[in-house]
Amino acid sequence: MKFDLETAKPREIYNLLIGLVAPRPVALITTMEEDGTLNAAPFSAYNYLCTDPPIVGIGVANRSSEEPIHKDTARNIGRSGEFVINVVTEDIAQQMNICATDFPAGVSELEMANLESAPSAVVKVPRIASAHAALECREHTTLEIGRSRIILGRVVSIYVEDRYVDPAGPYIHAEQLHAIGRMNGLGSYVRTRDSFLTIPRIPYSAWQKKQE
Ligand SMILES: Cc1cc2nc3c(=O)[nH]c(=O)nc-3n(C[C@H](O)[C@H](O)[C@H](O)COP(=O)(O)O)c2cc1C
Image: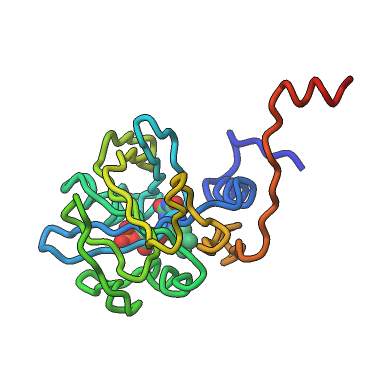
């Protein structure tokens, strides 16, 4: 099938792209409301974009495609300039999903999901205590594109539980972290437990030798 994106509806484009750009990491983002309440919501339009400087990007759609109502996460980042990306692993996947529920104003997602917070090292916004890793970020640039915002954040501090770090690299013991990936908008995710595929890079010299 071919889809002409000039005529396709926003929902159709969303369905196609989130099923094809997959699996995606899930960031459970904590931000601070104006009154100091902690907000948490998951985002899978998310990745690191470069490491020097360390920049991550998040795509945040408006709450409704008709009216430009910003999601709390985008509004809080715009005001405070800070956020924390909590890495979503299998053990907190159900709680992450509760945080995506559209609770009325004044209801704390963290409380509903039974999640505790812990102080961050550099930013004021706390991280989620049960997340095994977190990236503390400061807003670098926000691009307003149509009905969405692309937020670029500079990572200013990284927290990882000791057991997931090989200090020699340092490397992350990714095969033990059990991060999950989002596959589509139908509630499908992938586990990374026991499913690693190792494909080492091929130096050109080794490639040439193989051809001889
Ligand atoms: C796994 C998952 C990933 C999501 N990714 C995004 C995303 O990348 N962008 C977005 O705008 N909404 C995304 N959502 C929806 C938001 O989490 C949801 O709208 C949430 O209520 C926003 O909360 P907030 O208003 O507190 O920011 C996702 C939901 C789930 C369950």
